Length: 94
Image (tube, rainbow, N blue to C red):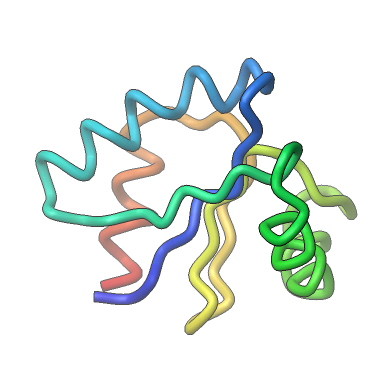
């Protein structure tokens, strides 16, 4: 299974919507996301910025939260999405 990252922010309303879906996906599919908070953790923010050339073009030209990312395949999923779309993306990364 590939390493999957969820870049999120504590105060982000879209992240709050997605977190229970990520938790559900982790339980149902035995998938693990590395959840990295970027608004209050400079190390995590720097990591996300280091992937800007890959992430930004797939997220409307900017870095936003939440962003789901696979550093091995450079696959990106941006923003608040339905559970089925998140699941399809995550399973395709295996």
